[in-house]
Image (cartoon, rainbow, N blue to C red; front, top):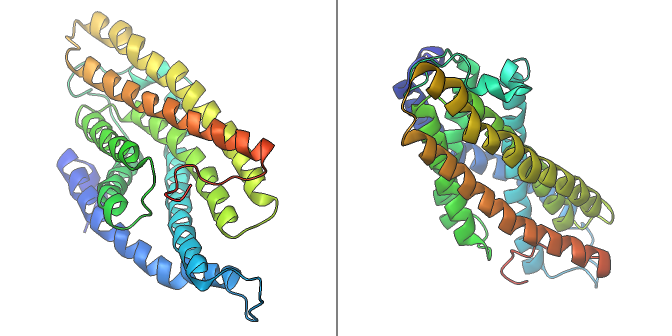
Length: 289
């Protein structure tokens, strides 16, 4: 299978994404059995049981959540590293005008895109294609289940739509500013499930900083602002292109994602409030909280 050739066409990119959607759960299952589970059991289950140790059922529940967070930490780390690798030397990494400059026809935008960016898109699409059934059948059911489902579906819409109309440069930065703080969030949850003393609080503080920097500041101020103004002023008006309805669709999906960020920011601040007053970083989204 020639992955490079597949990435040269949109159809090939979709095919690769579907293949990855089937492959990733297999990889996750193997890592659960061979890596995440053994590491978790070594941390959770002492060789000599003491009278004050938690019940085995409680430990198994924590282990299940630990493995889920371990998987997400791992996959988001891969996505962020790949995203940085294919984006950091590009002009659009530091100047949002280059999300659009070079596009003279639309849709799709007719500028060239590297295979690296197309690989990133295939991997992100493959991940979220399997994330929807995983949320339903595999992962712990939390209070924000429907918000997460809406997020996954909106993300699938954004990935597919931006890939189809070749908005992949702005899409790469959307991926980065979302994925990077998920690493710290899932790492903080892993540390809490393993009952470390100080690490959960430290990682949660780093997560909060990254969340409000990337999703509450960078995402609306740079990404949404760019989508609102720059494709109209730099492309549509200059080349006499009708941007409708694509401009409204893309902008609407981004704004919907940002509305979910505001809701989750409220939950994050509640967790921080509880940490300061009570000294706990329990996940407010858990069923039993």
